[in-house]
Image (cartoon, rainbow, N blue to C red; front, side, top):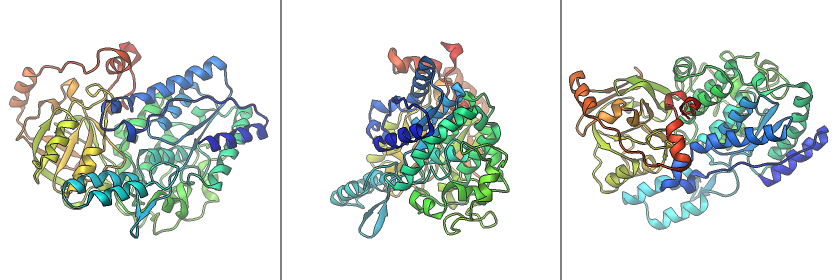
Length: 506
């Protein structure tokens, strides 16, 4: 990213502007995972937006080039741009090349995290796992599959905030360096023309971004980030929009972790512009982009992509989008599942609840060999407020996949998942346990019904019993009573609203 900083600076100077560099904190989820640090990951999105707002307002900067590449940083930066409503361009630093070991390509998230479960199940040696660890990351860049970082990069380009080609241009390449320099030049033009963020980020452009997410089968974390961006832009986008658009938008690409294609394959197939070309009859083509052209003008010059990676509309991978919103007695405000990563036989499932008060307890239960087919692991008190911070669950889902139980059980949580999660993993259950949502009332042995085609998530307990449990429920004491997380816990709203902060609670 330091090299890209220089390219952007050169571009700003070439365009006639004066560059001013400042930074924001960037939490690495890989380092934060497995301990208390993961509580800070999603909340850092709000801090990033606040820091950018503070610096820009204090120094009265004219425009922003937002250099980013990771999960919470990209939406945090876009939120700031929308709040400030000044000319802004997003430059994502690019996906990593895939690793390679014994004749197969490797992805950091899928191969190394799932190796933990494979080792635990006796299906992989510790020596092979160590080799995967060494070979999965051959260089710089974001994780190679369509996890949250790369999904947000794709959505930034789809909503018009990145120059064409930005999302999939690989890290460390000359193409990425050229895009960065052109972005520096272009931001000066946007300032001169007074083309601001909210002229780009509109309801129509956010719908384009959601359609891209659904067509790619991207990360479920976008159901947090797109509503949060919309909130900053004062646009009304909710989970209901994801549900509506999911029914209309087919899945056109099969990307790792649910499929086999890596980001480098999407790049060589034509990237996001080729995806937009396949989606052309469905997208809003009158939206303006930071290139200065509308979506329609860009698509006029865009050739059809490689159909082995980017399917045409009349030959989709799935007839509906890769993300589905579920509702029912267990999630009256909604829950989210990456349906494109669920096997056909698991789309409808009834299982027995095994209840855990946090992810760590569920991990211990799994590693003790107690998980059985038809179990539904209920992991609660991991929501925005109860977590606090909605810790990302990748260790659990990866260990389940590696153990061979991925197509035999379900995981349901009021927390969230990594973009690398696959199988029947349902997150963002709202209301969360900390707000006495139904997930707080589930008991071991309860029956849970999941019906993805019907969009249903039901706790099969009669109303009288549920009312008695609710009357007996008492809230758990907060995990943090001082510092930033205590404030965050007090201010954060439901995952169904993007887990944004409510200033009226301050």
